[in-house]
Length: 171
Image 1 (spheres, rainbow, N blue to C red):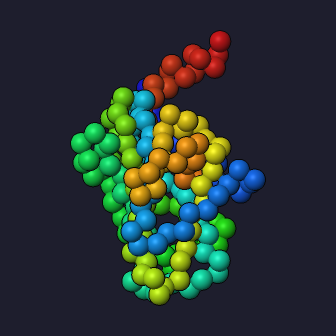
Image 2: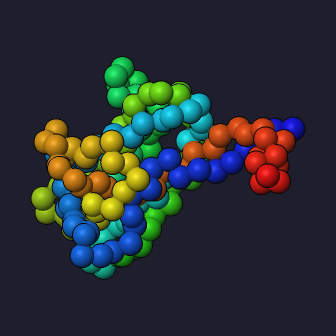
């Protein structure tokens, strides 16, 4: 018997603390967070912490979310999210309907970009030092940010053998 298990593949703390920081999302700002997929799995959901300071956003303001295979640059998933959907100090959920496959033993990159022009209201994303993605790296406009990560959770779904799980818990 097989089933599926939802797993937090990347768990960078989305709780505000003294270890948190802020990156303002302006045009020409690219945040890239690397992560490693240990097993074959399916991308289910990405959550990240938004800061809007109560701003109102124009209909043409978007945050671009892209997931890429690190080595090949192949696009796994891409979506433009209208900034008016964000709330201040909130965790935003991106449910990924297409459920793209992440291959075992491969590196991937979550890339966030904004098309905000200088005269438009800005938003920000929280960054943190608290993570289970210690092998992953955060780059801002290609520059490595030591011991920093986007405050986000990346959820995956993997197939599991139910009988193996039952045996494990009956021991």
